[in-house]
Image 1 (cartoon, helix red, strand yellow):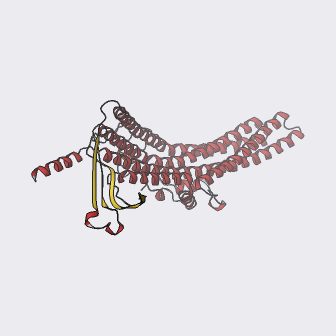
Image 2: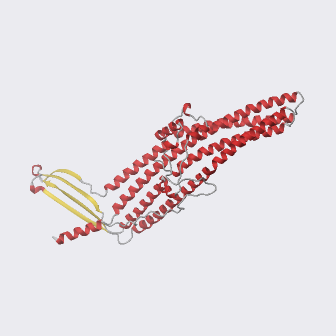
Image 3: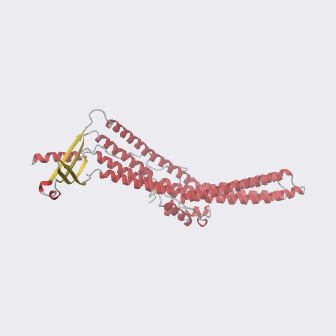
Length: 454
């Protein structure tokens, strides 16, 4: 009895072998804390990131994002990839267990005037690999990690879609304001041109003043045409992200409503939050899959043992098929081991190189995440001061233009002074819109690069 149990115990011990290298998460190749300094606002330590439903509080934008999550084709493709990877994992996992099959057959023949019939029914499995060295188990682990990587990829696609939709919405709001500004400037410049032509007809202004006034009108007219095109393209981009046309009632009202309706995202102080970013987790799952592939490649060097067996009944008479004498069984174990040649060594070297590649990609993903968050925090630390300064510039430019225009109309200053002041005001208002857009866009960017959407 003891001798019988020894081979069974040895087989069970071998079945516990795993040729994959022990996995340990690599140390992050970035500082332990996110950067601080003159460009960065003071931040409290604590939880980082926000769910998008807390980030976006503007009702119209929330509706557009919900539609994008329901209809966007890129997100649907990412979810389909998850389903495909899950199915492949199930296929590979099935290889760890024998596949039972049932067969029934009948044969009829006549030879030398005699009928020869045969009947059989059996159940068994064929070529089931006894996974003594963990080859099949590691292939299953690799398939599982690949599936988990696609899940994180889909989560990354979801976060990116939300951010891109919000950014496109904000861009359209800014371009709408630029269009309104260029139209206002064109109307104001046309009034100034009409006045200048009247003064020229009365001999109180020269032709040069008329032509200078015309340049402002035509520049504004050119900007109106360009901004009309840009707003139309913004709407096309928004429709594509939403997966369906966005009706007029859901279009942005103003940048100010988005500044009030998009929250600031907390970032905390620790850089460990980056390890939970979906693209970083995706890279780590890919590294784990590559590590399991090394184990499978190592196990392939050892003997491959498989078993084919069947149990059933066979008889020349159908009536006797299920009698005791008809019982039959068979078992065919086999083992194979390449001695010379074969691709196993090359496959092992390849799997190790792929693991090194996955490690480099994982570390690069962490470094990229750190840089993206640091850049967004640097912008967040200074954008409020820039916005305040830009609005003061608009106010000062407006006062300067009003005074210059009055002095020109009173004949105290030349038209060039008023024209310069008008162009300065126009440029300051354009820059103010760009600064407001940068503020909103950076809040959205922080949501995306922290990647902690629950």
